[in-house]
Length: 89
Image (tube, rainbow, N blue to C red; front, side, top):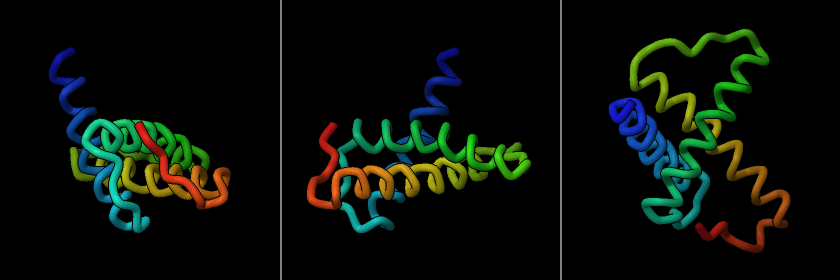
């Protein structure tokens, strides 16, 4: 249980940080990056399932899926907010 939670936090932090950099954001802080990464992981897994793509693998595959989802999440948040505001968590 604790190992699984730690795994999600690490994947979320790395994916959220990378996505905020790629999407030209200033970052959301450690907690914000973790949340963006974890939500991105869920979103990325959902998007892959729509295309019948399995995402089984190690931590690298998990980070890639979470990164893709986090980029999509940031793009959606910017589109909804009109790109004027940055998400503060």
